[in-house]
Length: 106
Length: 285
Image (cartoon, rainbow over all chains, first blue to last red; front, side, top):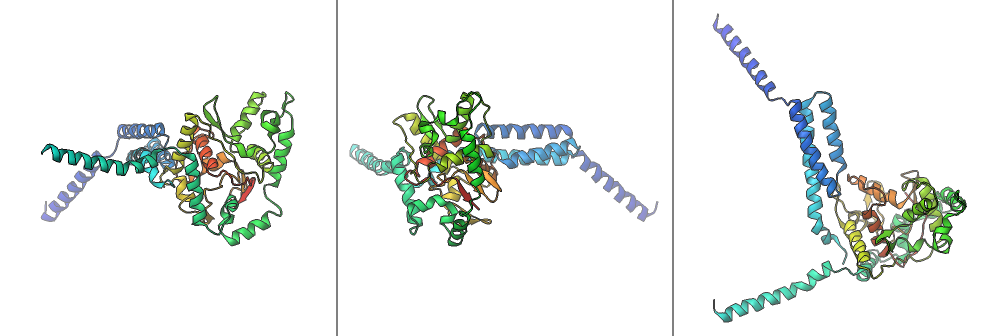
């Protein structure tokens, strides 16, 4: 095997390794289901506080759509986004319990 | 620390606490009459050229061009069809022979200015829309949608029979009524939705300003014009429709029409507009 050939082979092997490595980190259906359940629970908490956001619902729908289509990377990303939105809406509801008074006309 | 020094520190702390106490009380005391005076003063100071009764015309009171458009619109008002439909519905007997009028004081004529009221038996606020549906149910009829044309037509007719009468909301001497009022106030000023807006963000901080193509109405007198024909909707809208769409416009999930929160905020907003004339049904851009 020539030096050039050896270099080519080493390069191809590296690319293969990187590709295989990347696919090892791809989200699975289980990851999606877990992330979705967490996001749903966070949104339920916002519902208990009577303060859900429409964007949480639409992001959860996007997660489900991607999950149903087998695109688990997108599904997990959307579910995490929905969880963040739901948590922000709960934070808003809690902090506004006192903050609303700052806006009051007196 | 000597005893004298300790006494001095205690006295200073007590004085400090006294100095701050009135501020804390002012924020937490429920005083609807003081709220109403401050609320009305805020708007009359902000718009010194307007007479108090002008505020019920919403954005049309804020802008001369819009006011001229409104005067022309009133020649052939867009809510007229709804008004006629409401008058007919109101007079048409239910299957049992009774009518809506039988459910209301004075047969429902000229009473809109007294709604919402606090029902001491139920311990809750009762709005006009709720009273109309309860009337239907009490007479064996199915309730109608709070956000659709039939409810808008009925309330349009009832508002029309009260035109010019001053809003006259009572808060009985009942701690539950004060609590409902206070919760309504809290709802009005609470930011919600992803856009982090409260009702006050638009209707206290920014009346007369534009939000996209619309001129924002002042909160003072905003419910006196309900229900309204909105050009944006190409149709009539009830108070319930207005509240739920406000919530979704700021990316908040609306509650169900006539949930306690909406009933309470209607109570609060109507009370602070006491004395201003009923102008409904209204028309809006």
